[in-house]
Length: 147
Ligand code: FES
Ligand code: FES
Image 1 (cartoon, helix red, strand yellow):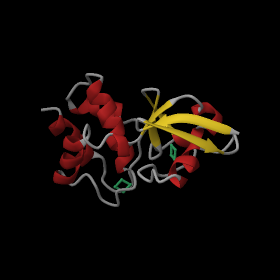
Image 2 (cartoon, rainbow, N blue to C red; image 1 turned 120 degrees about the horizontal axis):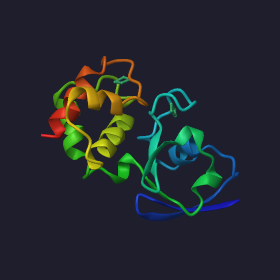
Image 3 (cartoon, protein in one colour; image 1 turned 180 degrees about the vertical axis):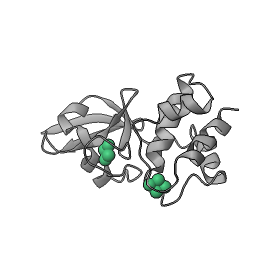
């Protein structure tokens, strides 16, 4: 089946099975900021924006992105520059596997007017898992990015 969509503001056409996982489709086409952590909607490592909404690409099939607009971290480098720098400065990146998911989650939170206190930030990160950092440094980087 032919799947037409916009990825990072560029029109794309894919010839693939309608049930192909979007996570695989995007990674195979060079969008490797997207990672497979759990593969079951639990960790947020595969996050993308689909028509402006943050979703887990491991739970989507190709048919669900037909005629839709996708944004990945590759298309949001400028908008997330400050966050990325603060993650680096605060030591919130260790193996880095979870990082793009956390950056997109944080970006979404900040742009929607999220609060800068620690408890609110922790709540906003509910759908993202990190095995390395213990989360505190991630929370600090986000708070710093909101100053
Ligand atoms: Fe998709 Fe974990 S890989 S939520
Ligand atoms: Fe390794 Fe988060 S930095 S999983």
